[in-house]
Image (tube, rainbow, N blue to C red):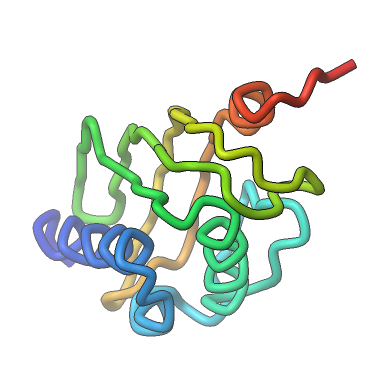
Length: 137
């Protein structure tokens, strides 16, 4: 695949998350995707991403992921992003607080045959928890 094709797939992934049209992830993620940094309780494949982002959108209904920097080659797309939203629902056991969050993250995705087949990533989950009022011990 070309760099441009991989970037387009990654862009469609982001559009699905930002729009809440999470079923579109089934067309973008391989059934046997290798997830190196799964979220807590994240299941396998596209359904794992759908379930995770459903939880995130329930917790932060106005959630938006904005790509700040992106680089790509024939197999991979790497990007830094900013996640914003308002905490309105349960997030990791914390009921909605109405507080706004802003967190940074990075991700590397590998693509094959038009689908994401492998992913590494890191998000500032601790920063999100602090912003909604959790005082970690």
